[in-house]
Every structure is written in C-alpha cells, then in structure tokens.
Image 1: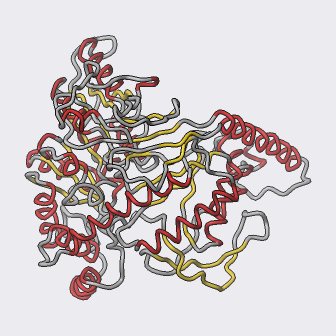
Image 2 (image 1 turned 90 degrees about the vertical axis):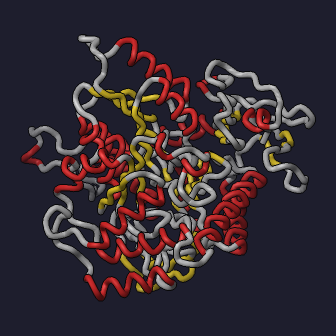
Image 3 (image 1 turned 60 degrees about the vertical axis):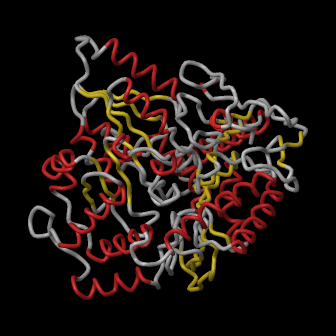
Length: 565
C-alpha cells in the first residue's frame, strides 16, 4: 500500500492533514496518498485508511482497505434480490392456495386476529431466501475444531427444510471458519493434559453462583492472571462472552447517560446499550470525525429538553470488527476520550491474543498504556480455545461489578475445566510455562495473516479490513453466489463461513475466513488454490486492480496494474 502518514512522520517527512490529523475523503474515509517516487495506479473508489499524524499517535503504518462495490455488481445484486423476492411472493401465493406446502412457523388459524407473533418480513425472508442456502450453516462436526475438522455428511430431500444424516463423515476438512487464532483448540498437548487433570479433581460443573458456593480457587487464580496479562489493577471472569457485554453495560450506564456506539458493533454491545436505558447515538464505523462531532454536540447541548450535562458519556468500540476485519483506531479514540472527558469501553473479543507482539490485544498492537482504557472487555472463546469473557480495569470498577452485574450475581460459575484451559493457554502466551510456544504461535499467526491476505489480493479478490487482521472478509455480493461458494469450497474439502443479509448490508454478502496459527503454509496454499478455482468458476474476482506478485517492495508499498471495468 502507499506509505502512510504515520510512517512518513516517523521518517521525518512532512505531514499535512485536517485538524483531526486526517485528510477527509468522501463518507469520512481517508483517501490514500500517492507515493512520491513510484507511480501507483489506484482506482478512485478504493477507500484506504492510513495512520494519522495526529500528534504522532501511530508508531506503525495503519492500513485498511475497503474497495467500493463495482457499479455493475451492485446493480446485478439488487436485481438478484428483486427476482428472489418476486418468486417469494409467487410461492407465498401458491402456499395460500394450498398448492405448495409451507413448513415454517406461522400463525394458527384460530390466532389470525391476534397480534402477530412473527415479524412478517423476517418470516418471508427466512422461508423464501434463507431456506434456499440453509445447508451452508449449522453443519455438525464430529472432531476437535482445530486446523482440520471432520464433518457429518447430511442431505436434504425437501429443499433444505429438513436434513438427514447419511452416516458418512467428511474427513480432514481444512477449517477456515473457526476463531481458533492461536491454535489452542486442540485435544492434545499441555492444555488438554491440564484440563483432564482438573476435571478429575473438580468435576465438570460447579452448580452455584460465585457469591454462593461456586467460588473456586481456580476462579481467583484466573482473575489475578488476567489482570497481570492485561496490565490492569483487577479483572473479573464471566461464564459467557455475550453476557459479559449485555449484562455488564447496564450496570455501568443508565438513564441520563449517553452511549456512543460504532455502527458495526456486535449484537452483544448493542443489546447491553439498549438494556441500560441510556440514550444511544451511533457514529460511522471507525470514523473519528463522526465520533468527535457526537462528543462535541453532547458537551454543548447536553441532555434533550433539559440540556443538563450528561451524567456519563461512554464510548463503545471493538478491537477487531468480526465482519469487516478492521481494527479500531484506538490511539485517536483515546485522544478524543481524554479531550472530552468520556469513558471508553473496549471489546477485545477478537483482538485479544490475535494482535500485538505479546498477544495482549489492540492496546499492545499500538503500544498504548492499558490504563487509558477505562473498561477492557474480552472473551476466552477465540484465542484461548475456551469459553466465557472478562472485564478488566481499576479495582473500584471490578469491586462495583461484583455486586451490581447481573452476570456476576445470577449466573452459574465457570466450569473448572474451562478455567484451567484459559489459565494454561494464557500462561503459555505469557511464556510462564517455561516454553516459547506462545510467542511462536503469535508470530506464526501474524505471518499467516499477511501471507493469506496478500495472496488473495494478488488473485484479484476484493477483501476488506486491516492488513494485520486475521479476520479476512472476501466479497461475494450476489445472493446466489453465497450458497454456491460455500458448497463449492466444501467439495474441495475447505470449510468456510459465508454471510449475507441481514448480517451484512444487502449488497455486501461475503465469505469470512479466520486465519489460525495452526494453519501450515501447505494448508493455506491448498485453501488459496481452491479459493482461486472457485473464484474463477463463480466469477468472484471483482477487484479493478491487481497487485503484481513478483515485484520486490517494502511492506507498506503496493504496485498495481490497471484493469478494465
């Protein structure tokens, strides 16, 4: 990519930008600058984020690309959904006349005058669009979800309304969909041995809450370890990652408070914000101009009608956004938070373990002080191969949550084997197990991520997100290609996740790959070969520029060749 302003400033070059350190382009995105010595052909519709020179906030290049949907592809995608909708209404007409059988949940005849139990459009979408490609989801696996998995083969004889198992198993499917970033989802090695030993000693469950009879010595050891790992005063662990957000945000904010939420935040953050009763305002994804405008307006105008100052302003962001592959602009968010005296809630579900030279997440990635983040949240379900979540911060904050969080007071304690899995894997990452396995896995993940993303770009695919993000969205766009891509990849023994509307914007359906440290180069090459083959078959190589793969170039420069639209 072109040299970012952060790296130019570091090298002593001039830095020109707006007041916020960014040169704003259309929709608030920062348009890339041309490298002064190399001729670089860029399509005008690609959006590339660069590091800001805002007071030297960035110590490394910060490169994110979001190439716009080609116009023809967008038109054809809308047409595809339009045709499916028309046929959906036609099939509903046939079902109403008892010509075609409908298997999906619907109101009983005697309840026709009741308030509808099911939302009409969602029900329509499910039975007429989702059902056509339902075979791409909920595939049962019968092995540890490591670098490879075994899938239970299933078939449907009624167009995906129901499935039956054939009794056969599809062996050694390369797993490109699980969040197994550091490869700790395994059934052998030090973690598995420690978990087996703890299971024999403590059993599988606790059967009580932490405040009653469910507070084990392992829980306290885990929380002290998490606090050391994050570099904060104290930490608290919870049995469910989703509930860590949805049940703790209401304990931190309430009526008279303002929550500023990124438009692409996870459903758990959205639910927690709504349950809190706070006023919620949404800013554009990773857009610091949009966030600062909301902060400024909040300070100037205060609460609606009364114009009293807000009791609290809480900013909700994620470390890595799991559908976009983008990384939060944390240095700028912290700068704005300090400037306007707001609080920052950072969800590191996908970034903890996966980013930073020490695997300490996005704070480590940017080399920032953990104490600048007021509430550090993360989950153990991805990089640690376990379950649950945590919140870290000042001791006063954690002590408050122990007595005010619904997830702490009413939820059953974490299972002892899960606790041991987290402790053992975290010590491995920190190097406290006496080995360098953790460090090697962190480095391997970073290398795999850069390699996988570069190869996909060279092939001509449009991929989203940051160069260092192990979450790699590959744009598919058209509804018919969502199911076709997943099926064709499985035929080639590659397991992938495909995502469409309503989880994404209607014209931005995608396949989402999750790179793991457990993947070998041979596995990645096999997956890339299959992706390229399917991409040619389905005509998915939409990018209007291709990276030339044979040139030697610095890591922050990219040379393109122009392609016809």
